[in-house]
Amino acid sequence: MASTEIDRYLQVGAQRIALDPEGYLIALDDWTPAVASAMAAEEGRELTDEHWEIISVLRDFYARYEASPAMRPLVKAVAQSLGSEKGRSLHLMRLFPESPAKVAARLAGLPKPANCL
Image 1 (cartoon, rainbow, N blue to C red):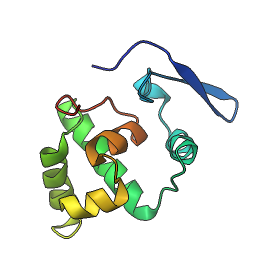
Image 2: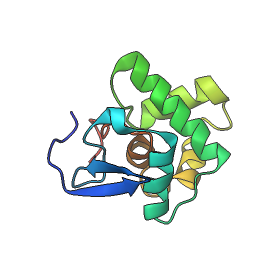
Image 3: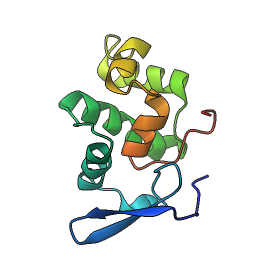
C-alpha cells in the first residue's frame, strides 16, 4: 500500500506532486510521463526508450494485477512483453542499477513492490 505521509513536493510545470519519504507518489493518479521524467531528472537519470518500455510493462502489470511486481515477476513480465533478451535481470540492472523493481515502480508512478526492502 502506498504511503500517505507527504515528505516533499515535486514541481512539474504548474503542478505540485506530493511524494512520500521514499520518493513514491502519494496519489497514483498524479502520474504522467512528464512526472516520470521529472522524477528521473531529479535523481540524475535520463529516461531512454528502453526505460519507457519497462515503465510501460510495469504500468500494464499494475493495471492487470493491482500490484507492483517484485524482481522475479518483473523479469517474467518483461520477457513475456518484450522478449527474452530484455526479460533478463542483467538488462534491468543495467537500466535501473540500484534496484530495478523499486526504481522502475517509482518512476512508473506505482507503489513500492511489497517484497522489496
